[in-house]
Each structure stands twice: as structure tokens, then as C-alpha cells.
Length: 304
Image 1 (cartoon, one colour):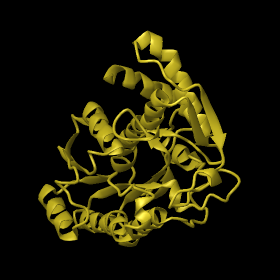
Image 2 (tube, rainbow, N blue to C red):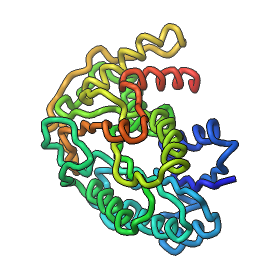
Image 3 (spheres, rainbow, N blue to C red):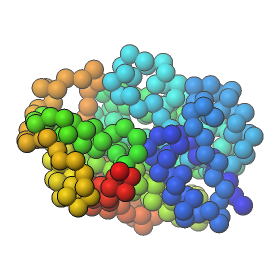
Image 4 (cartoon, rainbow, N blue to C red):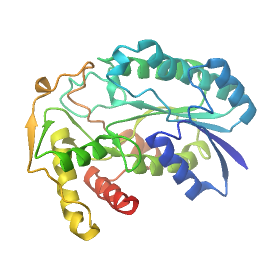
């Protein structure tokens, strides 16, 4: 049986991947799942030792330093996890003749383009987080092993801390929510990511590992953070009587400009990512963002 080393299983994407891989590929793959304590990505020697002990056929690395604002003051830590560690994982994977699937972000772009970004567009991160993730991509490319770098955006789900959970919590506490309305992207559920990556394990690793490179992996469609928050509230209202959820306190969701909500790290105004390359190369498609949200809300209902 082939072996996958899966990192970051205490995070959103890693957690969803652990469940999805076990559900769909348990007969073909043994998944060795590691959290930050079992695989310390700040320690290159530790990474090398663990990878050599496990000797995987494929490494999937969703683990990352994702505290976008804190990264501005924790540059060394962000680079250790997001830039150095992926390079070490790539080197060890190459040593084992294994493949690597690594996750990156829309933050490698500056957000000034007026249409959806394609993978060949110029990268120009405007934050330490984005720069550290781009450095990780480059470290992997320099090793030259079979790899997929999957850039995703606005990740949320029923597990962990994320925008969805924050909006629901605040909507229970406040009558008015003020949400940024001039940043656009595609909210992408961890469940949709996990399902797509499970398909890629078969279509890329098992069939044609020559198609290495960067691919965008996001739910289809686009919306602003304000629009996303409004839809979260609307879908919650549609389910609250059916599920017996507590009523929300919120009476209005109000749009604001980015300038009215300053943060230490700059965000791209445009995080729209074209997935045409992924679809054309592997035949992998993700559902429209509001459909994915509906599916996650149903999971929340079960979880609650």
C-alpha cells in the first residue's frame, strides 16, 4: 500500500483532507497524518528525520503560518514555516522519488488586476505572509521534483476558526455588522478543496506526474467579503427554525471600504483566481461558492 504524509491536520484544510482521503482512498493509500507537534515545520532537521522515517510516496502539505497580520511582526517565523519548510519537504520528497502537493495563496498577487488572475500572471505580494508563501513556491520549484502548488483563497469550513464562524458569532452578539465591500474573491470551503485534492491524487500522482506546476484551486464565482457575510446570515436565517438554532441578533450587514477597517497587513483588492488551467489539465472542477457554503452550513447543523 502506498503512503501519504499529510501535514497540518489540526488546521482547516489538513483536517478536511484527512477525512476525505480516508473516505475515498483508504483501500489504496495509508495516510500518515501529522499535526504541528508531530512534525515541527520550524525545525529543518526534524522535518528531514520524520520524512525519512515515514518514507512516503506522496507528501501533501497544507500546513502553513496563516496569521496574516501577525506575520508583519513575526517575519522570521512566517518564513521558517512558509518558505524554508516547503523547500526541505521538497528535497526529502525528491530523495525518496516521491511527489509533493503544496498549498499556496492568492496573497502572492498584489490585487491590482481588473480580472481574474491566471497562473502565468506576474506575482507581487504586498504582505510578509504573501511574500513568505511565494518564497515557499520558489523553493519547491528549485528542487525540480514532481509537484503541484495549489493557490487557493478565502478558506473556511465547519472546523476551526474562520470568517464563517466569526460572522455567525458576531451576528449572534451584534445588531449591526460592518464588512469590507471592496475586496473581491471566491470563498472556498475546506471540504471542496479536500474533494478536489483527493481527485488530484489519482489523476496526477497515479496517472501523469509530468503536469507539475502552479494551479489555482478555488470555488467558482466571485463575491465581496460583504456579500459573503450577507449570504452567511441569509443561509443561517433559512436554517434556524428548521435546525432549532438560536436567533441572530443582527439586523443589518453594512458595506464599508477597506480604508475604514485598517489592518497591519495589506490585502489584495482582487483575489479572483481563474481555475481554467486546473479544469483543462485534470478535469477537476469545484462548485460555485454559494453552493459550497450551503453544504458547509448543513455540516454546521450536524455539528451543532
